[in-house]
Structure formats: structure tokens, C-alpha cells
Length: 122
Image 1 (cartoon, rainbow, N blue to C red):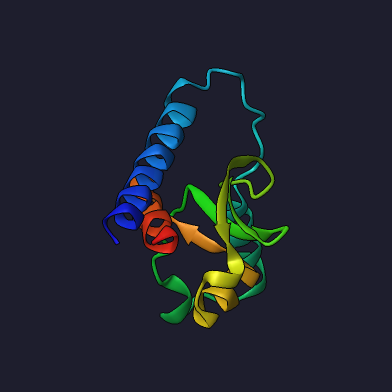
Image 2: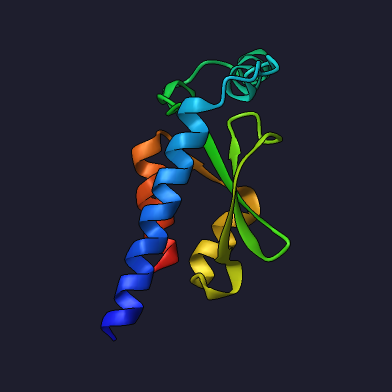
């Protein structure tokens, strides 16, 4: 039992360090693409009258989690640039999480991303 816990903790640590290094030391120029949240907001305001419901504050997000080839994959906010391919099998996730992955799980920041990945890997 202790060996399993040690392996899980090591895997979570290695994943965290790898993600940190990838995010902070990747100096390749990134393509600038239009912010999907901004486009969606502009389209919504053109099509709908302003009401109290439509004025709800939307949270910004930096990452999106999707299922790809049976594993959990982290994309950047554009939804096409792969940030991290995890080895977390989708089959081992809860049914609720699988349903959320169909539309993508939107993550606000690195801290929330690390917490989610750690919870899914254990």
C-alpha cells in the first residue's frame, strides 16, 4: 500500500514539475489567435437584447481539458494547441467527469489545473 501511495505521489510531483517547466520555459513564439470568449461575447451581444441574465460575469479561462485517444489532454485557451498529454485514462474517471469532457472542462489558472490533474490521477 505504501508503495502505491509513493508511486502516485511521485507521478503527481513529476507531472507538476513537467507542466511547470513546459509553461514557464517554453519560449517559442506562439500564434496569436482571436480569443474565443471575446468572439462569443461579441456574437451574443449582436444577436440578443441586453437583459439581466445576459449581463452575468463570465470567468476567463486559460486551459481546456478534453479526452483524446482515451486519455486526458490539456489544451491552451485556443482549444487547438496541446499543452500537455497526460497518461490519465478517461475510463477511470467518473461518469460526471466524462460527460463534462465531451464539451471540455474549462480551467481558469495553473493552480486549478494542478488540483484537477492531481485529483484525476489519484
